[in-house]
Length: 458
Image (cartoon, rainbow, N blue to C red; front, side, top):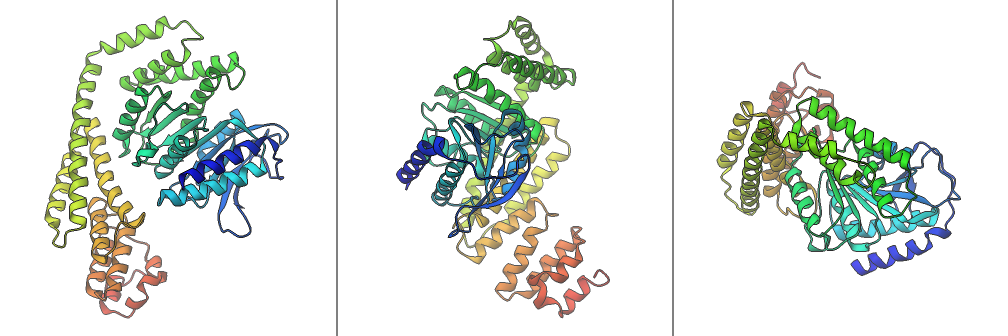
């Protein structure tokens, strides 16, 4: 399977310079382009406003975890306009089987390389969450990807998805409330050992696609990488502009007392602009900030927090895996542990509060992904357990309640289904029209308790 993946990619790669572009609008997202008449697979496309079909173009293949092509393309538009990238995002690849997604990616590559003239030295992959893992795996497998933009997740858990002496550039983007923050730090340390050129951009956000501005900063770095590798002619004006932008951001972070973020940005300047500018003043600034008492204190606090987060997350993962296959689950343990975290969050320090948010989201994520991605659950009891964990972590999030109602109606336990409906409403759910029209509730419409719960609300 994997050999086939590499073979098809090589074939498309060799043909890319011979292909001619089919006419598409420039400067707008085209939602859905069919891969073939025989398939329901499709992709979304964005051509930059100055796209020229007679020239070889750089391209970014983007993967969204739930196959939302338009959503996946949107964060990359500013970068595409600035640097001329074609953007392609699959409407078919989503979290699930890696083998299936590799096959989908194969067909996507084959289609796109047959439609456009692609610069074979400027092929990039990108993705968010599970899509980031797929983007990284493709880079590792093919050894023909120039750069990866991994948002909100690192490499796949498969050994084959880890780099060893790879030559791509790796730009990672993650939020400081993202449950995969610690993983991204570990991935950076790991790939740095193998001399993989990389940068980690951390922002104040949770687990979501980054903004266009945040993605553009990563592409500014990838452009510097292209200069370093001799892929494009060095543009001193663009280098100076990027330097000013990086320095302005670092200075603003320093002024706003976000000193660790500022140090990261100043160090990024030293690492990437040393060939072009005298940077003694930046080095002096970094040294000064490292001597700051609050910086030393925060670094010590973060190390302690990361260590605790790692231990707690491992505890939850092991307990979840054990309980998933246990018939008599001690759910009191889950209630007690989640309650402790939430109570601690109310009075925690700034950094500890963010860690607790990451940890709670990680518990939610393992439960929702287990029940929704891949053949990991086989019984209704396992589904119920997973959705109960989701409700425990985020009691105001409606989807798990709907799933539980469906689960209990499916095993003819109407009373328990109505218990979840009551809990849903008690936790602030107000969209009664959705209850009225959702097919899940058709069998409950004439039930007295259902009528009472929704009385005067339809």
